[in-house]
Image 1 (cartoon, rainbow, N blue to C red):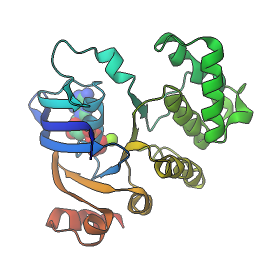
Image 2 (cartoon, rainbow, N blue to C red):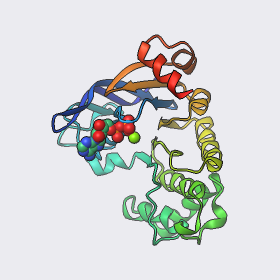
Image 3 (tube, rainbow, N blue to C red):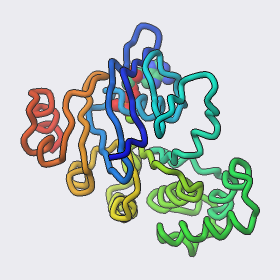
Length: 243
Ligand code: ADP
Ligand code: MG
């Protein structure tokens, strides 16, 4: 399969705290990969390194065959290929829903307002938020905000969607509506890398599960292997605590 993102020997330290150690893995076109592991194991740091919100200490990040860590690479352009969804939504609070989904398209992708609006409305309807175009984020529930954040990311037409615990800040009754949208994207064949604690969801949507502990990838494979018959003791312990 064609690799979209390939991580090689990635290391990241904050001072003398080694947060990622020799991380190697890849995401192929159309693949859904879920990254699981205890809090503090380095999952967010790994996602933040992939979109260069953090600078890796060592290693390579290869996007469609090109190493994006070499100096010549246009980082701004690279970032437009990745859609990021955060735990805390990160919507622009003083902009309405539609505007949240348009700004980036106009500023970064230089699309016309009409073009950006058409695209935004399309994705707002994919996430079921087309009726809320004029609402401000404060008028929305957590689940609605997160669906808008997903529509905003999709509006940039990224090649890969990165999710960092998109349901962890939600009230339990709102988790389902967000997972439903993500499941739909997975079914459409989008390339997705998802950090999640929702094991049932991970089992159902993933092509592959990656388990991280203390900054290293301990085990990876198809969900039925990693979640049902893990080969590593640390994976078994984690699952016992989680399930
Ligand atoms: P996870 O997402 O798996 O919970 P994180 O990637 O957030 O883990 O954190 C892994 C480790 O990196 C933690 O020990 C955390 O304190 C540390 N860390 C993360 N971000 C920073 C930062 N900006 N500065 C210093 N330490 C950080
Ligand atoms: Mg995290």
